[in-house]
Length: 211
Image (cartoon, rainbow, N blue to C red; front, side):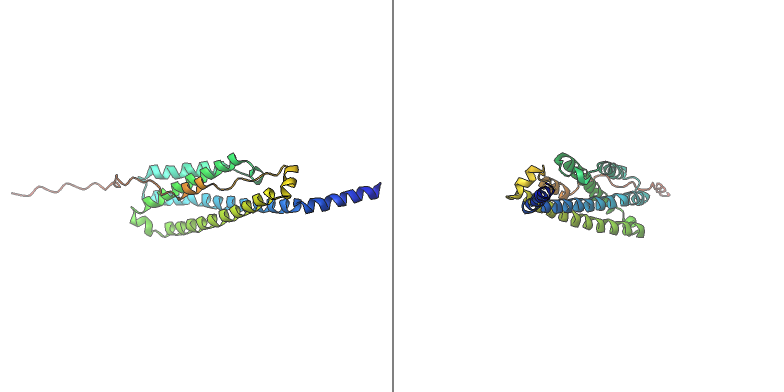
């Protein structure tokens, strides 16, 4: 009986391996790892924002609407957490994407407003923060692309016969990816109203000409 049990287990292991079970496990872990890097880079961006907002406020305190918008968008983005275990939930992933897209737009609006303040643009602290932000945005783009590729590989695997039979047996389903709508929203330029000029310091009235 013992030898029969061992033989059955061995046969089952070979069968699962041949049907792609091990491949599913490997690619599922790759998706989770890629997602963790996406979240890590978004968090790195969120950590930069308070210093960036405070620096801008020091030069352009009157831009309250934009400053508050960035702060509120950051709060929303950091309040939504999607763990690797939640990656099978399209609604959770979509909500996370939307919040990060809103923060991206808020930051774009902030950087457009900065163009109105030459002193701020030349401030070394702001320039350092801007360089860090740009570097982080590049890292986010790389991390997102790696996640997209990992999900595409995983989804392709579990849809392919005979691995799809193994996926159905163990309840593995396709994972949601970054959507086309989300990519378009992130790429959309911000709407900034330049109709109101920055407040100018009050000047003394010119003296009346003598007669």
